[in-house]
Image 1 (tube, rainbow, N blue to C red):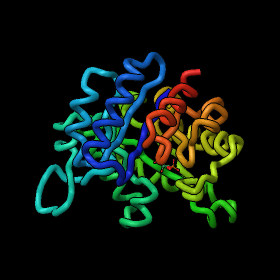
Image 2: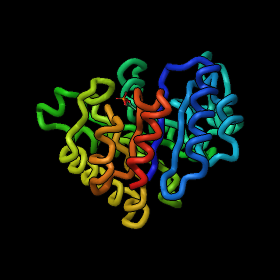
Image 3: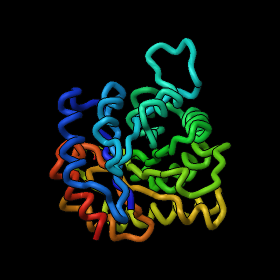
Image 4: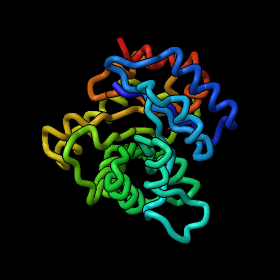
Amino acid sequence: MLVVGNWKMNLDLAAARQLSSALVSSLGRQDHVEVGICPPFVALDAVYSVLHGSGIRLGAQNMHEADNGAFTGEVSAPMLRAVGCHYVILGHSERRQFFVETDAGVSRKAVQARAHRLVPIVCVGESLPEREAEQHETVVQRQLRESLENVELNHASELVVAYEPVWAIGTGRTASPEQVEAMHGHIRRQLEHRFGRTIGAGIAILYGGSVKPDNAADLFDRPDVDGGLIGGASLKADDFLSIVQAARR
Ligand code: 13P
């Protein structure tokens, strides 16, 4: 199981240090639950100093597809590696929606992330109109196919996929465990088709969208749900720790 906190554009440097210290002192080294946190870029270095040696892994929320160059405001894979990142979230729906990220762009970033030994957490998920039109499986299938184009894997641990239905993000409206189970099964079949049975069966598929301490266990119990990508509830140590606890059961 894997539980990753996506802090989004929240917490200043002092608050980032405080929250990561609280997690380190409560979690220590996890047994069968892996934990990651993804602070804003400016806090990565400071948070890495806190996490170092703890078993909690660091991730970034985005990156550029080039190594370096005239791309004002961007951050590259080698830069993320240099500050201790293990994961990088790619194609989050907020980036697709507000920053016009495309599946083709996500695929180029995912290839670049792998080239620098970062583990991409590739996000997919349908909008509410797509769900209501019963297009959700088709949409997610296309997002997976195009976002993972040219991505080569030697091992399942080199990629994480997160299913985040847009209508469940930050809305308090979680997808039902049945909806999550059905979509995760669908994603698993696509991954096995794309990367072969052995690798496809081992890739972690996270659910994200209003995961809270009181609904986490029900979601994590379902087949093909290998953990969660947590937004709002990752900003409070107690809530995040309860969700990690739910993944441990
Ligand atoms: P919330 O948990 O706040 O709904 O956010 C989910 C998310 O977008 C994680 O990446």
